[in-house]
Amino acid sequence: MKIPTVCFALAVLAAPASSHAGEPQTLTAQIGGVAFESGDDEITLVPIGDKFSLSASTKGAAAWPPPKTRVDRLSITCDGFADGKPLVLDHKAFERSVCDVTFQKGTKSMGGAPDAEYTLDKDSAANRFEITRANGKVYEGTFTFRLKDGKGGVDVENGRFRVEDRQL
Picture: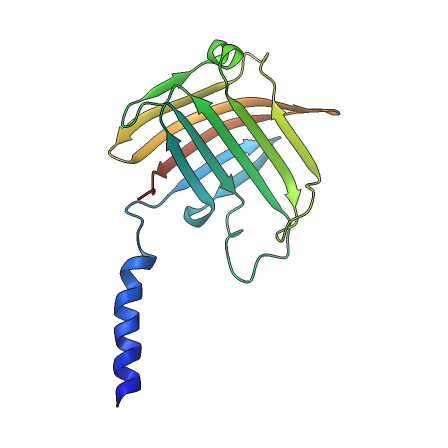
């Protein structure tokens, strides 16, 4: 019987490829007073030189078939990153840096415009991003931001993350 042998061989070869992650990732925050949680499959950390991009979507957004509910997305891009080292960006650093934070609320899972889109209020004293622990390619930290749109704003509070640089 060659079919079971071939299936077993494919399963053995596919198993290591699907479990490339060494550490489970999490990102949580209160955004506008509402809990936001992102899971392992919805988080991406991409450090490039002294900059990084950290993106997270609503937990379950990466599932197939895609969720029928709308998806929220938080994206943090900033400078000052040093591989394997802690980082503290307070509100003064945000005023002068090239940091950008966006939050898209209520995006359809297969694309389309979000219900609302907020950007960083660089004048807010509440803005803070901190990598408190760096262990190899795993980073842990906290964040707080004030975001705004044309109608007002939302506070991002009690933000916590544990993410891994999964680039090859």
